[in-house]
Length: 249
Image (tube, rainbow, N blue to C red; front, side, top):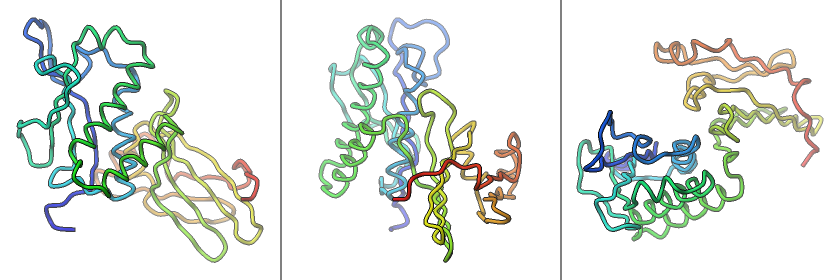
């Protein structure tokens, strides 16, 4: 990886202020275009799944999609706007009233569609990247809000623990998904733990150990780690016997 190459981190949605708009306006989507509860999570799920697959986005690792009526409707354009080399802007032409008249389901479909089309626009010359984008799109269509993003694996001779997370599945809190494979007894158990924000997992689950039939997650002891995990009971402990038993695969 060249020093200027970054792995994608986040996809966010913004709006361009219409000429006749009055009132507070901060550019974050939601004032002019009436988004759903899930809009922002859609961008995060797509970005984080690509991040799991080490998708190199370029010098930028954030993609900001601007909804605007100032360009041809339905058009997607890579924006000239430059604030920071870590952010790439894409403009999408749509009138607020036509977006706002859609149902919640239609809005979510449109946001998903526009996000994948924006990615394909940015990487149209790179077949390998297009392949990954389409793969994520297929997974998202299959699992929808419950798409799992892998985070960490810990494996010994006797067990394997897979940690992943979901971002606001079915309009609930984000979840840590814990899968425990007992290699000796050939059993597999699963459980979830709530996250207030999906990013908290990066601080809450630093080290993983198994002791006395418990899985224990130790949090990151940095100052940022302490802030991010302040509202959680620590360490996070999971009783293996209380996890849900899955049929062995």
